[in-house]
Length: 317
Image (cartoon, rainbow, N blue to C red):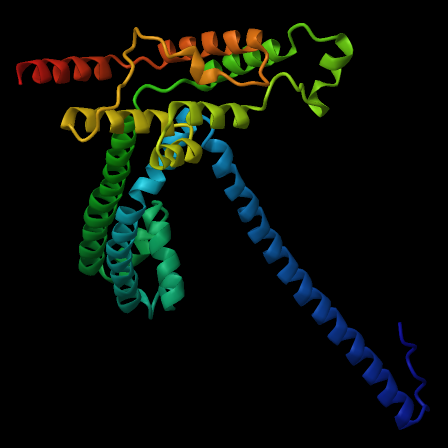
């Protein structure tokens, strides 16, 4: 800290003292500004990290349905936001025009927007507003409640629910997180079956050359099945991709645009789909059994009835 100059010190010493303190305060302001910017950057960084969970959610069917709902409803949500903001700002600026001269919370356009947002949450000083303008307050609050709270918010709920219903219809019956964890544990036990204790303890940091990775197995299955590029893209994008692609293929078969075959619920896939040169045959058999069990978990009676109706129509034609 700079030393306070004596009373009888010259003007040069006092000017140096003022200059030193000015420099220190300027540096303190600079550091504070940079630190505030750093905290804002940390906020945006946490948002970027949060977006990475979207990729993880695509690997769980139930969570993937929710993420697909937001993606499907994005366009409708944008149009909804335009209508909602138009009505919301009209009420905010209308309140500013009515109570802006007498009430602090309505005194500026920004405060009016904040107060209107609080009114949307039910936090509003209605008595003070009514004391100043009874009729205007009654009209403003009644129209705000009916149009924004009753109509627009319920419209938002209906919009999201409609897209969620469509996504569930496209994806069909999906497994829960508990079922997925159970199949994962079985798969890991099958991968470690017959291995030494040392290998089991260090399996998290090493690979078994006789058992390929899941990504490689999936690529090989798609190659053996001869799937087109469009279905491969669906499968690699989300865990719901195989079921969505299966429904699309069933629809195409019924429409006569393709002659591919779709397995029924009681049919078994060919073991050749899992054939790989570097795969342990015993693990391949367990993986095939696990796939059959997973198919039974994902059996959808509605899909079975739809398939029967399509078969009847095909026979009738």
